[in-house]
Length: 110
Image 1 (spheres, helix red, strand yellow):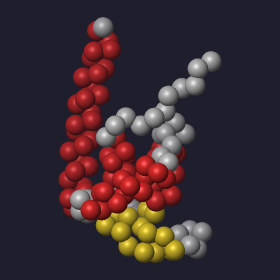
Image 2 (image 1 turned 180 degrees about the vertical axis):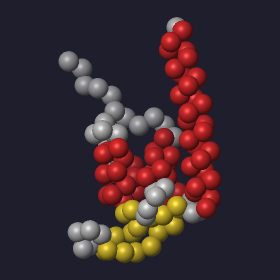
Image 3 (image 1 turned 90 degrees about the vertical axis):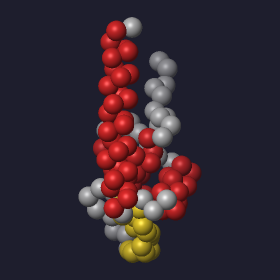
Image 4 (image 1 turned 30 degrees about the vertical axis):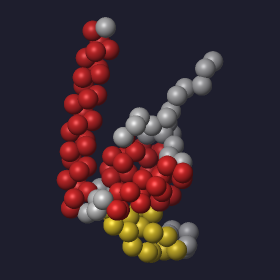
């Protein structure tokens, strides 16, 4: 049996990070764990992809980071959405839903 592909589609990581921060600040590992959990263990975000994305989103002003203490009593950077991040998330979700619907139409009629 062939191994199922579980790579992230280009451009979706930023959207999923923003979505995971929509309701509360999280540190990096908690963001990755949240994506893994919500995707029913299908998607796994590696540190080599996660942290560059977090730094990029912070540089763009979509998230901000503050130092805090994790649930394991370790110093960690906690990320939260900014107003610009909330606006971008809404836009990205709308775009994703439009694109997914278009792909579904193509698949159902091909």
